[in-house]
Length: 578
Image (cartoon, rainbow, N blue to C red; front, side, top):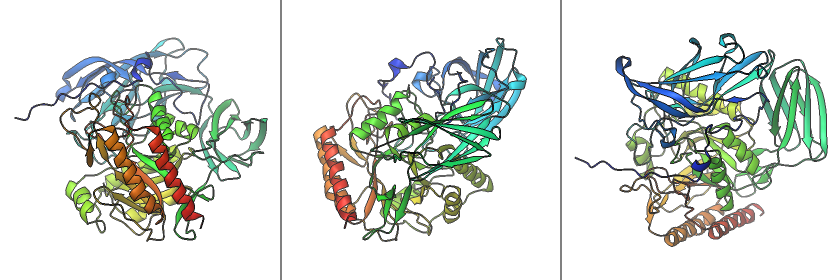
């Protein structure tokens, strides 16, 4: 019998500051109101098994999933379980306007919500926000309301699921279930602004408003003072008096307030444009009309404390700022959608995001990984049921709408390494029509199809030798995966997952320098214009991160990594200035 592995208890630096109401920061910075009640904190928690039998009854710290250590529930769910969350809340008299909305950042996977015994709605899917108008079932101001949330997570692969697997191990991780993002209330007038859509280029901004009164006022705040724009209807186009372009090096944000009748929301925008052209020598990506090299990392978004969330938003900031200090300017958010706070911090601090859509469908190690790694990289697709197609495409559309206003998001991946891939050319057309302002990578790695904005390659087990050959910008969207396991800071004390293994920081750093300077830099001169090294942090068995899973140890020094970045940018500038 195989001996059970005792996984290490890895504490992060963020846990000490968690507080009684974790993630109490306003969860939607791009559409912010003054009415906000955070419902995170301790909830009662029950797990019902078959025939409604109670399997566990305890408290849970929302918004952390029950599988996470810091949730306090310490429970690994089964696909037959029903998770039952309950808590009381009150609505103060001075909070309530005309309507009260109940928001969930994300709940995995099938959710039903009840307020004071009345069902107010249900939602399917594990990554996207949803809300319900609960005004008509609320008790009087100051009186107690009972909120109940039931969740089933059967790991139905008709829905997007990312890197979750019931039998975790290797490149597959502990699944999450139930509430894993902020639960909150806001109060709005009857005719309220339900959404903003912000389109920009390098000169102007167009704000399109959904909902609200006909007459509107936009107050733009800059260092020079406030400028007021009065308009009627749905949209306003204007150019700021002073133009500041957003880049990872200069992440300038314009902030504004939109007033519409009794409603008032705060938001922001950035002037920036992402595009591609053929160039003099090679196709390349352009940021604000200039050739730009995206020097990036794969970012799984897993943490040893809360699994799908860090203990506090500082965990997101730490990853972004630590990687910037090492010279990186981009994170590829790998088949996971984060809370909007993450993207706000990327906007604010200057980190470009290559965003993956979240995969659904089955996975075959032989077809989707083993054979393509060796030779089979074209001509393969998967069948998808009508149900899976509808769910995937609806989720993709919602993802694009959710992230549309974030200037940091410059690039999308539809399918990663063939996982769940189907009708890729059609989906490229649909997604490009939905958002033509971003770069679309149809098939990251392999199983190429005709339509994509980039030539996207993955290389792990052979020397990197690439040339732009498809009339598209050349992107090395995954490579590296070098493992350096730090004693006392690794999740799995027995098994180690990576693609090449090193025993010391010196060996690890030397290998990175050799990889970048001897393989990446020459390929930049062959047309390479973006790279994604695997990865930001260790994740469970994987020890191929620049940070340990607990975020306690940075495995490399800043100076050699900054020097690598300088050599890459120098080679890119020389190549594209000819």
